[in-house]
Image (cartoon, rainbow, N blue to C red):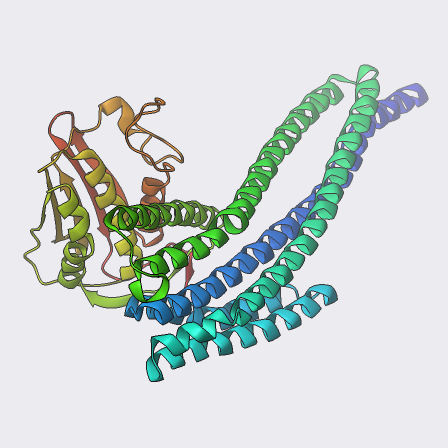
Length: 471
């Protein structure tokens, strides 16, 4: 009886030891994984601060570009750019101030930045006021003092300091995250070794428990590998965003400004026809580069769920007529017949600016692929309570095997070095992201030799994907 009791106790102990081992491993792993997730949240927070800093810089560039452009040309479009920057900057500063409330160094930087922004806004507003009240020469003379340029240099430096601070924090947090992951791995390995030894001398039940634990370990390793892949992708996005905002977009302001000045006879003198053609080429290529940069930044905002939407009720037929006006010059250059066949008088609650962006991408794609004297048709109609839009062309069409990849990032139908159409391959990705964020869907129908039609359907009730921001 005593031997049986002792044997039973040994079996129970032998059975409980692996369970205890797994319990300890699980508890420690749970702690380490929670620590790892906390570190990942801080990494995301850092990216948010960097992204908001980029938005502040973009708004200030809009203010500078708009005021300079308006001073030189008097064009109301430049004033719209200026007003857009003015309307956004206050909220962006408040947002970045809240995001960095726990960081005294960043709060000091934001205080400097706010002061410089106020000075720059005052300077740019003065330029606009001089253009309105005293004329072009007074406004240009104010710009020529370079006070505005010096303020922008200081603003960029403060923003750069803030981003450097965040990048340093990012390195520290990434290191901490890596240590947490390593501790989890070490814990799992050590626990596995102990569990294997105990399993050898235990019952079949203990052996089955070991197999379950192995499956858990495999899942944890796979999750760890997936996390590493996600971190690498986020790092690539951050590097690309920094390159776009600092190395590409900033020089475009100067290039665009000087191109406009060159075309104004009263600023730098009269140009001959060849020189005018060269300046027009510079301006058109600058616009194209700005579009590519905007596409890249919009794609990143969609990935980070940071793209903003401003919904309101508007007339669909007016939106469609705007497309004819906006894209008429582009059509004239290729003698394309561009028609709006919308018949119904519809109203919809959605974001007209984002829908304009979808149309711009789809129409530009159509222009690239239709022949000279080709046809492009746009239309909007009611369907099941929603609004169905389409852009139809009579181009060369898209092969069936190429259609599945069209809404994937950086996808090109023609990937050869001699392809005739450029672009980042992000236009349709952005169309899909905007459409789905507005609660709709997008798809295409195409036949080789007969043309392509892109459809997108938007709900009429103003619903928006809950993962996106609405302003």
